[in-house]
Length: 485
Image (cartoon, rainbow, N blue to C red; front, side):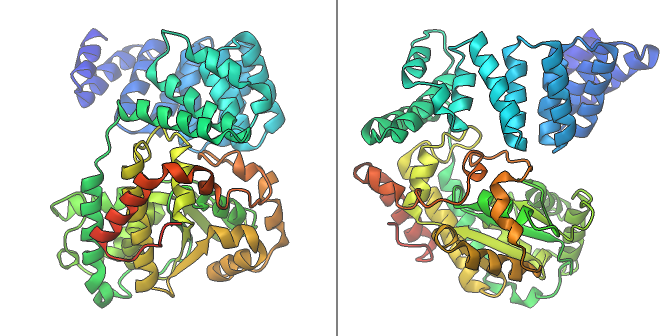
């Protein structure tokens, strides 16, 4: 095992895998070796194999709490929701006084719609440690500020040993609390500090992304000659748009229809495009010229994408792939799936900016600086505007403001675009048991509301850098985006 450990530390993953398999061939009962193999598989981006190895660990050693918690995280990424929830309950029964186990149960319950069970798990976690920053922030994110006071959040911040990540989260939680109390100056101060902390540790290459966006716009100016080259399947429905523009809400509404199943946020489209670009030996992160691709490649790319999707549930004809950042890839979608429904969500850019700035995204750094955020949102909106102008019959636009003020008309238009019958069941989208893993988790557990429209006006005096960033993106990419505010 020591040789396998050394190989892994040197990032020689194939060698580490071979060595640990040698150990397991001699003795299949070594839980430590199975656990080590799971770590290798995760590094190799093979979560299904990692889950199998972690299951073996739990079979050999049911008392391995770390393996159980790791398996919960892997199952979450694999969308194996019922299995994940069952494992959470099993771990809670075994370790009812472990805060991490209770938080895992709480998050699973919230994401999967078991709100009572989730609240009870978080309540117990809070009793065990009233100052735990993760519990406090999770409860605030999930809209349970009745269980957490701003004084408690401030007290948690005074811990001198607190890592920068929970420190940033606490500031976003405090901002949310202050906004709920209509203390908008304090809210923006906390949002700004949370973003400042994250920006100090995470960079964002906005200049490169703007350059790529400009290349994409030029790339598809001459793409009409490739019409009809793609896959004829209508099974995938793509929901995309700017972050915080209503993509999660649209996907949840669609998921209520008996013929539509929401798969959540998936990276399959980006993976397929990148892999086929590498196969064709093309330079750059994505394509530089459509002329380098044989026409039949687009249909084969579409079939490759379809092969990666799970089997639909009984009676389901359409599968929703909801990913905001795919807004940059709509041109590729039109070539790969010319018959598919592509839904682009748009929203007042100022509301998008404020929502992103106050959300505290932990995996993407585009929202940590107001000027860069303006550039990024301006870029996304320019892309959305370009696709809408270029292919108005292919791109179905949903404006957030229309969705929350005249929902029946917007939902009817969505169903017509996908070609399914009207279904009144959409009104219960907020009570439907389905997985939600995005920053909109607490919002889509509520009926449609209009209070977020015009939210940016509470912070208008702080938003000049954001406006300037939008203006810069518009200048670089052309006047295809909305006028902010």
